[in-house]
Image (tube, rainbow, N blue to C red):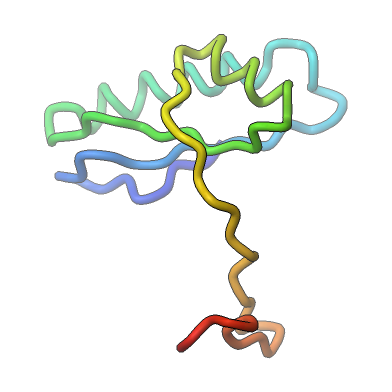
Length: 99
């Protein structure tokens, strides 16, 4: 599980997850997502948190099921972005990216 951009006073944040192959199909991801979601709102709701966004590949049926089971509704389709360059590997901005 990962929570991104979750700070005191933030109105929204992102949540994400990865599941080990051996854990898939056992309900681990939905239970973990529900627990993290409940914790985030219990901890940061009084400080302004109103929304958690779960971003996943729409062509990944298992991720779509996890989102649905956990109460995350479909909102919108985002455009694909290339991976961010990794400065630790000497990467700079990719082709067509100014910086």
